[in-house]
Image (tube, rainbow, N blue to C red; front, top):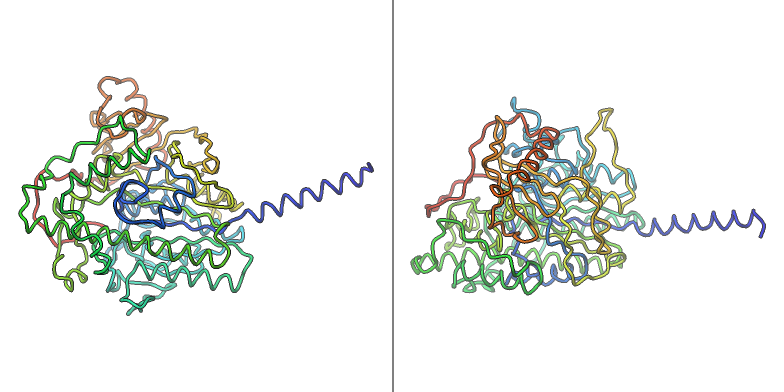
Length: 556
């Protein structure tokens, strides 16, 4: 065979490979829900009806161990940049709409810095259109911090950490592009509702993009504010759940725990974690209290149900366009269940008109404990109840349905490397002539085919002096561990995640050498990413007594 013909065949094979790679480049949709507990989806053990999400999860790869950063904006900082929140200026929280920058340390400045690139900024040079709809929460005191200035070509949503669902108002209202929307119009035949508006604007953006650039892939970040407080939902959605929670939180926890065992999500050898001290027995509540608590949980469930309805609408749109099979859909929650607002929650619920004008009403710690099933603690904390997220990836063209749970631990730092990998995009070494930190995460592509991850380094987080290090089956975790002046080693706990993922058997005192070795690794990480210096802040601990309801907003 002539050498010239062999060379021609070789070149043609390269062209064929290139076309195959180009065809593989999927549209990418990153779905984020807000303040939803580990057990609040049907596919993770819930009684809440989430058939559309459950179907996507069943058709893809479902993770049983995926970690967030314990709080809304630190999680978003890592999700959007692939870096740890301290590295991008959000070591604690973002500034509120009323706050101005001050002399905080750079790693705690309260808004995303310029020493990083967002997923949108990294994907656009590789040919992706970049679209966002929903909650930003990475800084809003300056227009240079808005999504359109950080790589997104289209944006509709809320820049703040929380907003009312039916009647959002500036500065916690809606923004289109860079412009506040004073009186947002409904996108449905019902009243304006943020969950619906976020989805419908995302679909409109996709349709517009397809008309202009039918062959160009897109990246959509669709970040719902639900079910973050204030708890507000349509009355017909609420009605489907009203009365379903009359047996109380303990009964709900046990039912979800059993369902999780049946699903193979958790090991039946792991005990259900004890309820947090101070949570009252359901039978000790008055009839009026039980009725109100049933209503609160029904509204919370209705908000998640509405998310599922909207994801169903989005999927139907993708299928009608013929793009569904080559769309990578990733879904996760930003942190664990939210216990803010006292033991029984805060705010108005029975008066519908007043409820839908609330800005911070919540369902409280007792219900959050059920949302965290089977784990301990909540948002803010580094234990499993605060940092374990539902997480799955769905891509029919590449990922085959797998009835087994994917067991390799992963974390937010892995999302950006994964999306860059499937997009054929490159993470830059610098931005505007300034070097940027390298990514610590790894691509999750092996999970597409059920293969284990080749992670070389432990996973670490820190938020509000709560921290963990996950290394193989071992987890070092503590509350109030990392302060402004160092680490309190007596507060570390050690757990074997293979035999005790519900964190009921602390091995720190029986395995002091392992504890010290892991703590030293955490210290190295914390120094590298900028956990210090930091301002001293009040430590959070779960409430141990029933607290009165209050209308005050404590955090986003």
